[in-house]
Length: 215
Image (cartoon, rainbow, N blue to C red; front, side, top):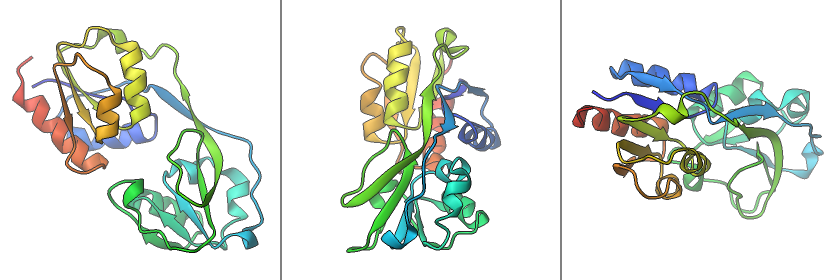
């Protein structure tokens, strides 16, 4: 069985690693990005009807400013983000599954998207970046990858991976979405896309790929 390489920054990396190990996989964690908070000011909550959260990092790194917005209901991208919002004192109005584009957002409301510097924008929303995923210049172990499966959780991770890895012929990519798969570029042994754009589906795909190829 080939090892699975997880590229997510913490704490997502450890969550994915724990799920992968529960599937019986050998896991290597190499973070391509480090998530850090940004300085920002919360707007007047009276100017908005609700908040969109597409990552738990917005709550985790929002600091004292995000607590000024607790009167606003939250539309969260998934249960992990929703749980983080509830723990911070927010009321969660809806929980979406299947990626940001599948979120069932209310029409005609004034929505505030608290997000990272690199994100997909929603139509007719106000976006404020509260955290940044900064590139790790020389991620340890990335140059020694071979005979493995790499889980790619985002298009940005695919771009960075393509920049770092030249010899790709014995590496298989398990991508969370078609967009993430495309950004990895050509030359890999195989590139496959998860059935749904979430961590559970991605790791199920990765497990099948790890088991189907002999190193």
